[in-house]
Length: 422
Image 1 (spheres, rainbow, N blue to C red):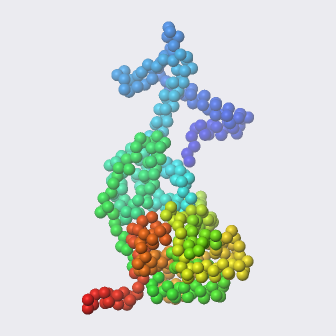
Image 2 (image 1 turned 120 degrees about the horizontal axis):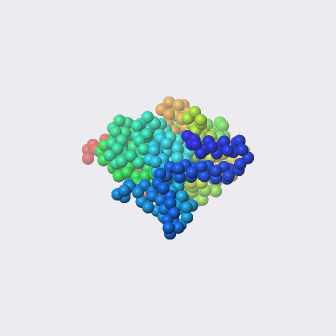
Image 3 (image 1 turned 90 degrees about the vertical axis):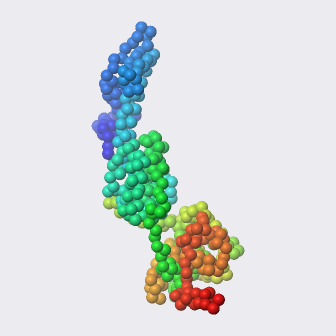
């Protein structure tokens, strides 16, 4: 960050004298006040009524000045200092750009989230969409509706943005201007008035079903790999995979399960594992650690998940294995000799199983999509599915998690049964 004259002077006074920090700041303030008084070009005088008077610049007046009067010279000088100080601060505010304000906003954003991965994504958008854009060097006070609307439309067209990707990248500009309003840098956020016609957004083609879920002939093979791996290694991470197919939990949620979360036929989901990251001096990011937070991805994520008879048997196997090996760590379910098992260990396994059976790699999130598609195929009420999997709306469930699990031949047979000889 750029240092100013007062910072350098304060450092000098502290380093080369025995003056205290309070006295140093007081001396700097006196010097600054003298500078403001020297800047004042109007006379200061005492009238016959003993009151002190002077003029201050005022563009609203015909003669471009206004008379002020105070009972003492000290008070009139304080008024002069306040005027020129405010003028200097106003000039500084008018120079603030998105480039200079971005870090201030990002630091503020960090205080409002527990996800360092979210901050990392924001910074990635900054580097990809803002860093080489002329808009970040325009003073915030000059960013008007027309400028911002044109910027948004060009970004959408040039980068073929979907509605979601546009919203994500615009968080930086929208949020920065909101904070600038709070700090009095600008009087309003003109970006709030920018509304984009949905027809202008690019639409991402829904991916092929076979890439998003485990098909009917794939899921049994993956589960077989998991059970065989467990028999050989006695590593309960293997059993997380069939449990994912039964519960539809997010990967971060399943590794955060505690035995105390289970009551009868239900599992209370209330926490998750997150991966914290830190930005290094060279601008790259490094994973710091995996840690548990006492909340889920969203408010809808805290929920009671029904446990099938198969799910309960898997959990019993896990608990029995932990007991036999003496694994204990704050009641967590997925443990090994080193303590709680992390999500990466499970996702690595399911991908390995995919390679073993000769299909394209699919991660644990695809097991979640498989579970939800199975529930939809099984005609479970959509609102109950939404509650089970922790979605805020049925639209999310249908639009992003409903896929055909059937092979081509199975699907063709369904078409034949539904349409032929009816």
